[in-house]
Length: 451
Image 1 (tube, helix red, strand yellow):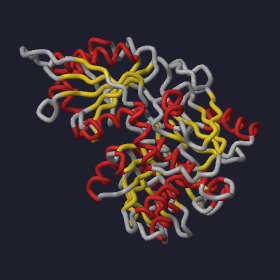
Image 2 (image 1 turned 180 degrees about the horizontal axis):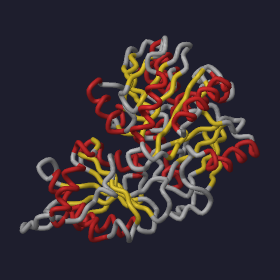
Image 3 (image 1 turned 180 degrees about the vertical axis):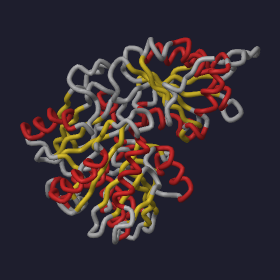
Image 4 (image 1 turned 60 degrees about the vertical axis):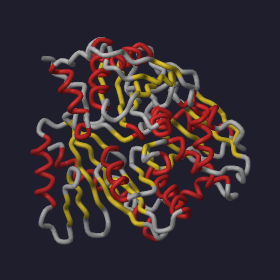
């Protein structure tokens, strides 16, 4: 019996192609997925990114699905949110072949049920793993068929229908696609809008020859920042490899935090539905719930991770949700995450007024933050406990363990310390009133973590 624990993650399947992941194994995953969703749907929609291994693995998965009697609708090259659109608009389960921002040697599978409902460990992924490990039972009925469908134009039209840019002033925007799927989707989505696109690295290349397609790493937006300043652009956008996340820089080339983007989009969504619920994970700035409340909304705090966000959105009927990692979720997009829709909201807000993006986002950026700081530790539990013991019982300190360890300090500063699910790491995020306070608290916590 194979042990798949190394590649079946909390929310997806991901591994090194040829070592951990090959066509035969992917075919079994396809068959197991078909068995899981067969009572619910007659077909599966499949998309893939630009990695060299993606078309072949997508084909193997399709072979597994059809071997169990279900049909396949192949949408070919796609961003992950384009696959979610196909799943939602066609009301079919879906599978997307991508390893997002991971290096070229990796690939993976993100799966969802009909309506882009997530498949994670508690919602089918563990069952799929068990089926593959134990051996997928053969099906002696008629095989399914494979058809092809181009949904890129429909996806673009759907997004443009959700955000009105018809009244926008003309904007010049630099877009760094990082050789990922943004190079496939951006030209179609922005076609006909009052926006001049200055493209960077739009060539689809799964070897990522220019930089990693992970815009949360400051090293990967240096080129974008320089280009924005060089051409005098109004803003810059950077997409990750599968283009479901979008990072924003202002006209000075300065990064705009995902928390500020979350707050900005939340205010726009609340203008459409006053009193609506907005989801934010516990690492977003405390400015997000403050701003949501000030605009009459109901902020709801959740654990980190798309399955938790989407479940809470379903439970509360939330109109929007945002994470510190630049994932943005919209009820109007089947509660799925789409960085492209968030980007359109930012550009619409910018185009509706005459000032620069830095002035617009200043109102949504209230505190200083450390960003995520990783520490390699030999014993995650022991180091977490040491940090908890150091702060527990202090006057005015509040501690909760919704997701890792969150410590609220007198005066408003706070930090969260979370263990990685896949590596021997602890991840620290700190927020305080100013940069000096952030640096002091960060040093204080890291001294305990790394002792």
